[in-house]
Image (cartoon, rainbow over all chains, first blue to last red; front, side, top):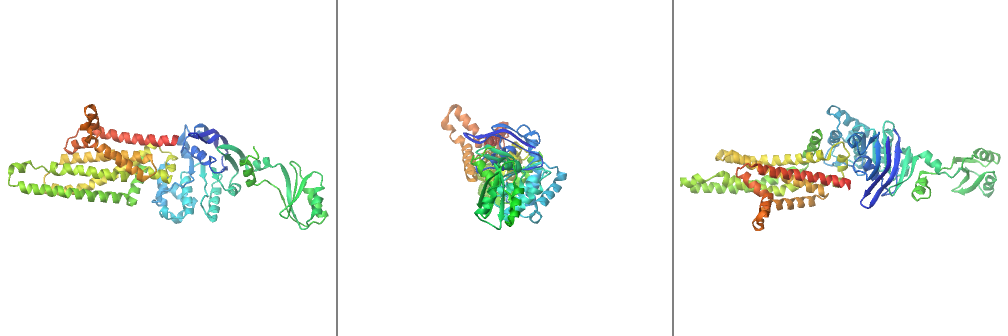
Length: 308
Length: 255
């Protein structure tokens, strides 16, 4: 649905985005991750037609964003990082205005505005001035204006920034509820948001692509070893050495009252470990697979520790 | 056309839903009234003094004695008011970053500029129409000629329209509204009094400075002379202002 090929954006001497390529499949939520000044907002601004690229190509729903800019703008809903709201307008008059500039036919305008208000949960504030509503409601108005023309693609730049925890949860729920019919690209700093909301990520740093793919594929490909974390009633050096004696186990360590048993990628020793726990009556409390978390993955990719 | 109307309607609402339009119109009308009263008072006193002398009494002309200076006074007041009217048009969008909504919508930069321009023009028309109330008295109690008065208003409208085009241009240059207003005021004042320096310039430069001056073209219109040169001059200024605004916005996005 979104295809970016060798995109480059220069501001004078500064290269904000450098030879960036990635792809987002239809109906998926994709996260654009990266530290500050990584080029996330610039990439989003190029995709939405706000600024042109210096070089490269990008298509949305097979439409070239530079050649068919107006058609692309009709199928994209965009929530910028700074909410584009007019505080002197009421929520309703603002959404009416947006429906007009998004070229919704007059006959469908009321229905579109009501639908956007309904989806975004703005019924209680529809007649209030935007300057007088809470930050959470302002964020919802921002989302409503992006949804109003029922776009196939949604681009959200830091959609939960500045919200309190309850509002963050609500906004994430709202974004997840939009999945399926629409393809969504979200930029965020919050890594937990990615695991909760996104199907995949594009990680960029200093305008360059560091990694991209579905979360499962990325974490699997970066896993050098596999293993389990085991919590037992019995502890001690002898327990450690018991598991260390299993042929093929590479490493056994004790971290935070948990035994971490690791082995080379592609093997599986969970049956042997379970048998040993039962035979020696070690008192199993918990056993879970060891995995590379998104935080780990992100830090290692950004720091250049690992490359895809 | 629908897109232009959407922008224009929103801008008009912004003007009238906030104190901006009311403050500008009220101050404008108070000042206009303040300048109009002494002119009428002076005309009346002259009429009374010369009433006994039919020859001189015949020479009294309300159009020349009241309306001509009245239009000039209004043009000076507009010089102060128009920068305040236009300063927010693009500066505020840039500062609030609401321009991101406009420029990512399927609507052209030209449509946005024209929509905003027409909204300011609407406020200007309201301001000028309301000054027409003062003319009710002159037409009820005196006998001014209508055509020169209408011509004068046409001149004011054209001059105000050119002022607005220049104001929009400066508004597109900066996100600071005060800077935008000061630049507009400076530019307008310069073009208004450009012909003051023309006598010292001499030769071709005198003609150029005279031609470029707002006042030079406005004088004809306030005297009731409708010359296409003056119309072309103001329309060129309007076109130039809007064209430069378009260029600035596009160049900023391409930078």
